[in-house]
Figure: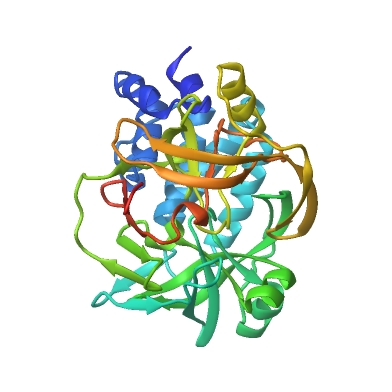
Length: 385
């Protein structure tokens, strides 16, 4: 199995070791830099390549850094190679480019960071809900490490004047499948002592979230805060940005270079796999594939029969899912564990780009302090079981 196949199979740490050995392959270098949260390094070396994968990765890097000119160049080259690439991805890139070109300068998400500040949230809620200033209005937003971009409710977006280019619709993946959404540009956003200009956001009807939690949207954390250290103190109801960074903790990966983070580990009794870090999901989830593989390898878990389960993300759906009564997550190569209870087994399609074993949702972090050290790509969690 080559390095790219291992990566797509969820074997990230092994794949990265192999990719680093392929120093002459620009796609391999780009994938390493993106996975380790260095998108600005990808376009530093001028490369002329006919590898569609390289130009798609370079497009992702340009989107992550907010470089409109570089995004235009990379998307144009990816489009030229469309016959050997996923044309749906190219279409989505073209929609993102249209949004990027509506920025008022050459950069999206231009940030000015002042003194670090903290924000309070209600720890009794199943989600972390904070107040953020958007286009001069206060918005209540769910803090979601599982969202690639921020989502705004359609009514709120209309009220605050989100800008939409002529081509702004793309197919976005959610926990309930793919949904067509509009993507627009927010003039100004402020949170935790940081002010941003020209921030892209997805716009869709979020009536069920508004009714249940009184929120106006979802904050795509890595999309705007991936250059900082962020701590979420669940017991105290406090979220804070600070400057300390070090190499302690679990390695986290920006999977496929996107603003999605994951960690390697295993449920006790099962094999090692890749688990998304998803604070926006109330519960940790296993994939059906991971459950099947674990049971085949001898895991003696207490698995229920299928039962009805309501899922609320962009849309509300009632699914029939099995649950595992009790599990213990063990981060790869590290001491400590996280106890989980009543873990659902997902019924939705797996990610199209990479094989995940599951997600660690808010139930893995409640009662603990979660620190996301994005500069060093480390996650720290205390206390551990």
